[in-house]
Amino acid sequence: MTLNEYQKLALTTLNPALNKKDVLINGVMGLCGESGEAIDIVKRHLAQGHELDREHLIKELGDVAWYLAETAFALDVSLEEVCQRNIDKLKARYPEGFSAERSIHRTE
Image (cartoon, rainbow, N blue to C red; front, side):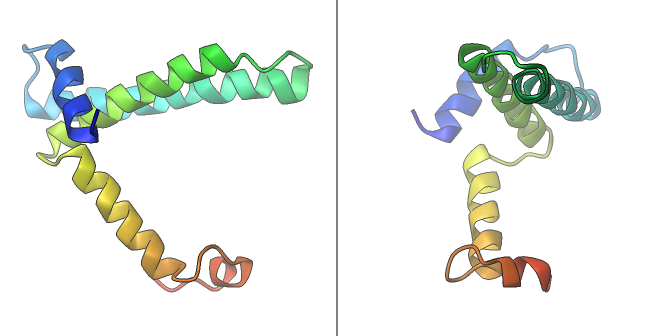
């Protein structure tokens, strides 16, 4: 499945009563909420001695993907474009791959 296919399928579950502004707000709030749930799983593992609940974390990452698809839709952009722009930014920032030096002395 491509990212754009995922986005199209995911958006079949979008609330059709929402206007674009509400979709944007819901998407960004959802990204924050689901990211918080993901870090809580990792926190329990690292700070509280729980086994890493890998399956639960994967489900939360799926929820993050859903809200990412929704937010991109609200901006009239495909997930593939969002990801391509990110890769372009990373290639410009780290043309030879990650380096701590380039990370510390970044130019935007």
